[in-house]
Length: 379
Ligand code: ADP
Ligand code: MG
Image (cartoon, rainbow, N blue to C red; front, side, top):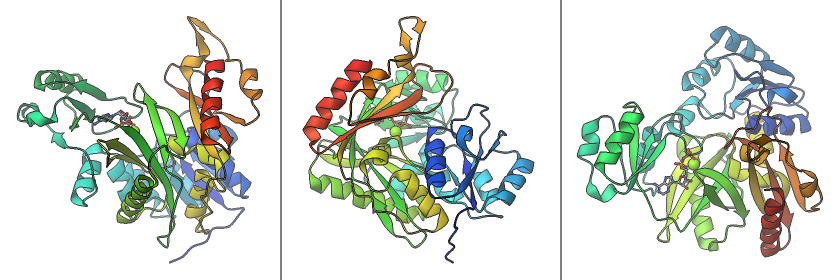
């Protein structure tokens, strides 16, 4: 069944962070209205939406009213309960569907999905109890213990060199279900952001190279400084994952490149931080694709018209020692090929994603130099 939703229909967004805010902007650009559901009073997306349902994700009376006013619903927050998506889907199209989101939001089901479908991934075991750690193969160490649910930006992870350290970390995570992954030597990390429509057509954005600091994405470089062959392999794997999930919408697939081998790290059932470069460097950006896929419009052209480097701006920038102050944005505004995006968050905390900038240009090398200079100027 093909459904096309046209403006001025109202679209529903579950989650109200910066990803939702960019979705609202893209939807407005195409003539739609947006309602945002997010329990945060200061939600960045709700600030610019037509309506804010400031309620919990399992407030079913509010969900009834939300569904009644929306022509279709999507999400920007990986941890929206799958039960909420299932419930809303009784009334209105919900994309991506609950089952796909459920797999991506749980590290055990995510890794099992990769294993069972033959997608390349690193060695891991599921940890339900202490005994699973005590009997873990020695070859897994040094390892990373990750809680199965609600981890993001490196939170809920512990680097462990042996079973004793793993047991300690498991106790600190209060015995919650975890995965134990071999800590891989990384040549680098790349990601593919793509959109898939109702008919199964996939549009991949160019593969980006990602640098992380303390588990948080720091910089994305596009085109990735890897072989074209590696990039098309990554795009092929990402597209097959989306197909296998029956995914409709925009998604991100993170990869490790370890000893020259491409391994899937994790999937994000939503637009991805590493896809922010598409706003300024591609014909269609990842948020417009999300709107298009949701509404049954044809996907847009994902081609990059410029080389780009995206740099995240974390809350740390607001602190000069103990002094809290606004960074000197004039230094960034002075750079002509730099696009600054601030998310409207009221308070900067260290590690919190407050905004990003993207430097674009024709020459990848020059863009990288300019981005480094810009970050030095502001930081
Ligand atoms: P998050 O959900 O926080 O993004 P990830 O699993 O992607 O969690 O981990 C964040 C970062 O930590 C990765 O991008 C990578 O830099 C590093 N990392 C995670 N797992 C491994 C691993 N098994 N081996 C080496 N580095 C890892
Ligand atoms: Mg990640």
